[in-house]
Length: 113
Length: 112
Image (cartoon, rainbow over all chains, first blue to last red; front, side):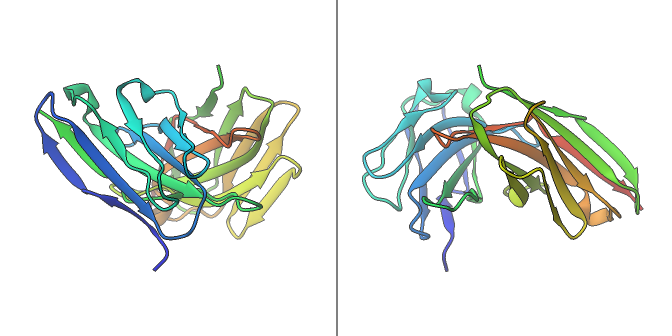
């Protein structure tokens, strides 16, 4: 089924650890996005990508990195987790051409102790 | 910098009444304005959207209006039902970068 997937769904990790949040979409979309969202609050753009080998910084990009080696895969890496990173991380994708709709993944809820 | 202001932050209405949520954007290069509904613990879902070359769009009980000159767009929900209770987000997308800026959200509660 065409969808956007995120793993893990929940993660509890200690301060200082390096973590990678996975995002994959099976819709063939070129554009992909990472957002940070505290429960019920606004979405903050972390990174985005126009396609393979393209990555752009959003507003919260300073403490994380992304890569886009394959169209369907857009992982987010936190080099050194801190308690302030505790939040929900949402991945999204949207098609190129005339398509506008942005589809969201189910999210990864991260807790840094 | 670019921002999207959204009001009100919370809204309570009686079942059957209408609800209106308003957003104002700052970047005149924005050309696409989606509205998302997010239920507790769920991912945001697109409910309606509008492009900058259109002034109004309607889909059953939901409508969106856009005033490009004033940089305002609004979500209108008529005949509200308890299942409309959720957090609603507006967003504006830049025409060149395809970067989305989200509003701060409106928590809508429909009272039965």
